[in-house]
Image (cartoon, rainbow, N blue to C red; front, side, top):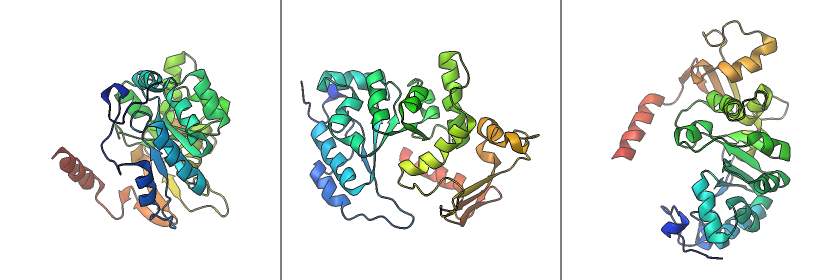
Amino acid sequence: MKSPVIGEPSAGAQRRFSDGTANAWAERVEALRDEESVRIGAAIHSVRAVDPAAAAIVAGWALERDHPLHAHVSEQPAENDASLDAYGATPTAVLAEAGALAARFTAVHATHLADADVTLLGDGGACCCICPTTERDLADGIGRMRPLADAGASLSLGSDSHALIDLFEEARAVELDERLASGARGHHTASALLRAASEDGHACLGWPDAGRIAPGTRADLVTVSLGGVRLAGTEPENAVDAVVFAAGADDVRHVLVDGREIVRNGRHETIDVARELHEAIVRVAA
């Protein structure tokens, strides 16, 4: 079994930022602390960028401190091929051997999984973060979210490359894309998709006390207007289905984080969002 150096092109590595060694990384992040509105987590970008020995150090750090741990997993078939060529195992299996799945692990993308990978993630109680608009934009494919959920994994949603910033679209795309792939409907209920967009998404980031309305939980709340054309005629009994499968980001009226109002009447209270996005894009392009 080969053990390529990080950055070796044949291993498909992506090395852009580095502390030099995983131990140096662990020493640096020891200075970081959770705060009331901050949770510290760890990330192994992928087995393309982090070798198994380094991944084991990062996974051990997260497990020992009970911090969330994320990694890109099987986003593309080429990633699987590179992992099999380098290590003789799929990315999921490599990460499992490194101890990552023993931590509070989230597999990002999880698009091209073998059956054994699905079992590993399910048995480990992992969260799988699907990013449908990114996977659609990059032609990465459609993930196997139903088998993952059936195996015991939880689901959450991400935007990754920000191909589209609309969590409603990310949520419904999980179901709608699987309909296209399978020719059948009814893989995920609106309630399950809403849970992926809220409670389970919060939990995989280290906030198990958020994402739902219940005594003792955080006052992270979103209101959605039913007065727009997308949601016209919505009745209380079908509101969840209507919001998940028809609402857009423009329908959001108010956002509260820990009880503090961030968005009021559809406008951010502290920043000009369009301007900030424009300036960020200009800076990156430069």
